[in-house]
Length: 403
Image 1 (cartoon, rainbow, N blue to C red):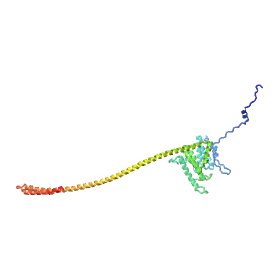
Image 2: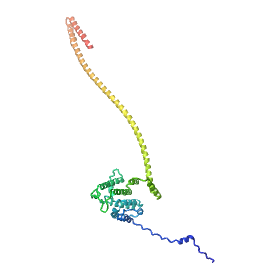
Image 3: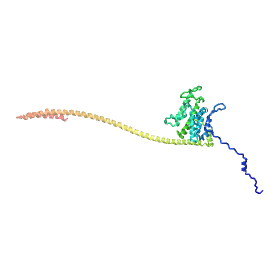
Image 4: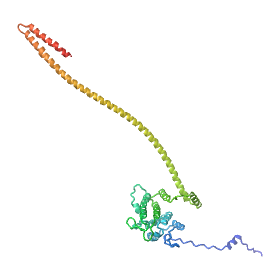
């Protein structure tokens, strides 16, 4: 018929009509973080009626990282969870995992709230929980006087000392005898089993991890310090007989899973190693320069020492010469004094001799001669005789004055 077109159906339309309509799955209900945390640490038994350890699944980890709300995981939840966690997580393995997830939380408020929860729960589970502190790390840091140690280093030293004391106490105790409850060493609570030294070490390391994350979140340590701190913790987990094949396969596994953080981590340590090499070269260069400078200074000191020794020898010679000159001067002074004394003696003798000569041998004859000549009838013969005697005395004694 005119105006009538045959029915035509496109293949795509026919295929679409033949497919059953898919029902949309209802969106999974998001559990509150408080409920997730309670389930992580709740007590349950396996077929052998043994308490299952607390485990943080990948889904729980992802949910905590994506957490945006801050309500629910407060002090009351921590106190409630502690009752079961002391049985399911005595070594704090799950709690440390929870602290890592909390630190990866993208929002500041829930991250701080979750970390505060982890610290409170750790304070209720560690070896000194009898102190009933809600922040064991703050108690430890309050004892830090800042004497040349970083907060991370002080935390590590403090926890190492506390756990070393407990480990030594456990090792020294008889296996069948439970440790006595004292002020210094408290027994584990009745609800939990006594931890072995190895389990105590594991608990200590998990506390160090939680404390390091808390310090990083508080801004009391910077990322490079935290990296070094966590690397030291990780180094203690190194296998005694490492397998290079396992390491190679692990890197391949991370590669196919597109784990960029591993590449970033390896790159960070590679950069640190390169910086250490560069720093080492600078130190080596500085050391060589210092050695050269030390050699130069040593040569100068040797030369100065030689000059000083020569000057000391010259000074000694001059001192000896001065001493000799002083002795010569003293001898001369003694000779001069002797000469002056002798001269004074000679002068006295000369004066005495001259006095005697003039007074007795010259003056007296002259007086007699003058008296003889002054008479009315001068006796010239007598005067001449006395003058002759005076002349003889002068001629005789004048030789003595010439000597």
